Image 1: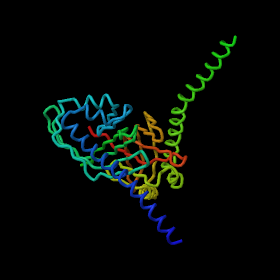
Image 2: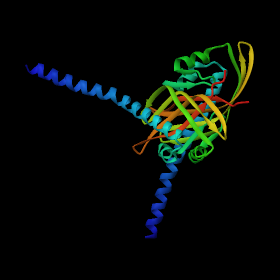
Image 3: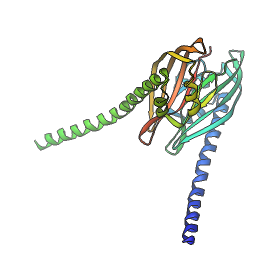
Image 4: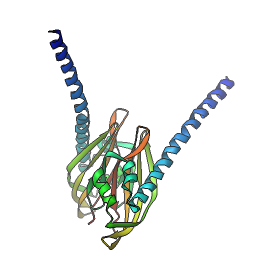
Length: 146
Length: 148
C-alpha cells in the first residue's frame, strides 16, 4: 500500500514537473514580448510590433483614442513622435488557460513634434495563445492623475 | 431530377452551416452585451450578490485613479454606503470575440454622490470576459479618464 502511495506521489510529481516549465516559459515569453513592445515603440519598428498583434487587435490610448491594428501600426511608424524612454514596471500576469492578462505601470518620455512630454500610467494587456503563439488582442492605457 | 434534389440538399446544408458560423459570434456578442448591462444595473443599485456572480474569482480592475482592486476589494468599494450612483451609461460598445475570450471596449459615463460630494466621470473602458465552466465572467477591467 505504501509502495503504491510512493508511486502515485512520484508520478504526480513527474506530471507537475512536466507542466511547470511550460507555464513558466509562457510567462517569461509574454514578459519578453512586453519588453519587445517597448523597444518597438522607441525604434518605430512596426514589423516587430505587428507580429505580436492579432489582426482584430484594439488599443485604447491614454487620450481616449481607440485604434485598430492598422492605425496603431501607423502611429508606431510616425517619426514626429520620438519616444526616448518606455519602461514597464510592476507587471502582474493573470493566467486563465490560453489567455493571459498583464497589468502594470508604465513610464514614457519623449518628444511629440519637438515638444517634450513625460507620462506615468497604468496598462492592461490581454494575450491569447493562437496557433501556439502568444498574440495581443487588446491593450488599454490610462494616465495617472498628477 | 436527382441532380436538382442533390443541389437543393447541398444548398440547404450550406445555408445551415454558413448561418451557424455567422450566428455564433453574434449570439456571443449579444450575450456579452446583455451581461454588461446586467453588471451596470447591479453596480448602480449596489447589488453585491449580482456583481459577485459576474466577476471571476481572480478578477482585477484598474480604476480611473490608477488604483487596482481585486474582486473582494471591488465589491467592498461598491458596498460603501456613502456612495450613491445616479447615472451609469455605456456608449459605443464594440465586442471582439476570440474563442473563449471576449474583449469589450467603449465609453462610460458615471454620475453620483460620494461622501456627500457630487462626482462625474467620462471614461474609456476595456472589459475582458471569459467563459469559465460554461459561465461568462469578467476577468479584467480597465477604466480611465482620457487625458488630452
